[in-house]
Length: 407
Image 1 (tube, one colour):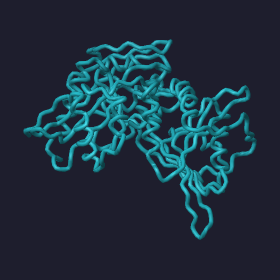
Image 2 (spheres, rainbow, N blue to C red):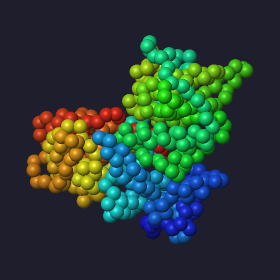
Image 3 (cartoon, one colour):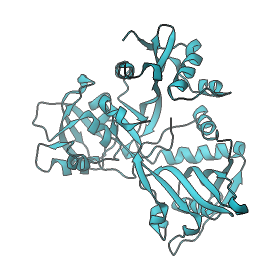
């Protein structure tokens, strides 16, 4: 393979973006480059060069992520990974992953995370499925709540420019309470809503929930798609994001969406796997909830990464870790979790309790997967009786991990 892998310069960013859009069978649209530049760190964008032409790429961006126990740490968030169709099946993506993980390890970042276009791609590079997301679709006339629900507070509709600072404040408070969520201050919050407003065939709305004292404690951003078959209304609400800091805000926002006049159905993609709406519904199966793979996580430095998160219970666990793609992670590590949720992790020669691949540690890192699930799937070996149950007691977390931000 006569392809060079190297970081781009600022002057090469446009060529990179054009090449990556082609890799995803898309085109750069007007305004894309300026908005992308607002959050770009060119030296973290790796390009695969065939002569003077970019034929693939992979980027990583440092983001603050909430971890179990309310701890916050920097992850190398992976994005813009693709190879043009003229150069597929030549090992270019593997070369990009090799260089990227080497660079991240050298830079001292302990773990990476990503949303996968296809989950099957990243397992071979050491990533594990760390969270799930829910997809719901419900007919509005079947969206009855259980008895006892009563609305509290009020909801107001704001125009985009007025809504953004309110939404950002609510988001920042909520993201600190759930593993997997990212810090999106400043340019990032504006960038993500530009991404979500590219659907030009629908009207966008921003609903803000305010509690009894008037403080904003939740929001729903949604679009309404019009359909009038036989001159009868069958509008569809597509929920782009619903974030709530309180149970009342959560329930009231969903009730508001279901009760919009002329609406026939409400759809929401990428909801948390433990979406409380399931327990609000008088007919839960009407949600037609489906689960899919969400964040994928890869530990780049096993002992460093395991000391970043918090733990639910004290305990000691010896992990025998296998990592064919990043051999510096191979070996046995003693993890000792303390009463305060902190932990130490160091190499050891002691007899292992659990034998696993680095993928498995990525899967359990945010608390969205348990050692027990992986053991029942034949992915993790229990080397000491009772170790799987003990490991799950130590690693357990609540709420379920979720990342509302698709990068």
